Length: 235
Image 1: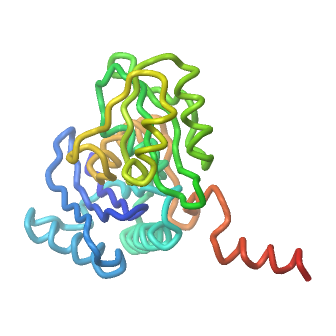
Image 2: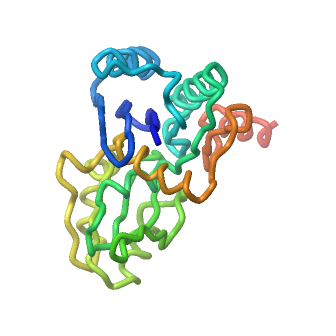
């Protein structure tokens, strides 16, 4: 099984190829360029470096949201375009799940925090029981205090990761009542390698879709849509 994975859901852009349990290539950038400038050139570079013929890919996995609205549109459009051109199925991976999967094997509760602005985060709660990845709380968009209250109620040690950590670090420190740590740099951002490996289990469970069926999961309205609704209420 050969899976191409894409993740442009946050500040990080990432492309990976996993084939038969082997991470053949991964290209990740967390810098100032927009994903529209980076994602396809990154894929092209990966293909050149490992002599990849895109026609040999079996599945295209994409971090499908939540996250940056622009980033999600770029990732989904890229995955859909490749899927249609190559006639390959897509694997729709929840962004927060894939971020949590970076912490494979930990005995702690995993709490990804993606900055959703307005004092909100895209988050969820996860844990591993042996090798089994379990969703304790499905990904959602909530106030940072709300997810911390849920963390405290579980009474277990937790590991925080994601681009929301530096934004809400002081709030986390002030409001977390259980033991906690912050994930180190090589684990604390989106990685397409995690998307690809998680996609393997999805494929085995038959959780695939066509390129035409694929739609990103925004979880909430965009800023432009919120502002439009507010103006309509005032009118």
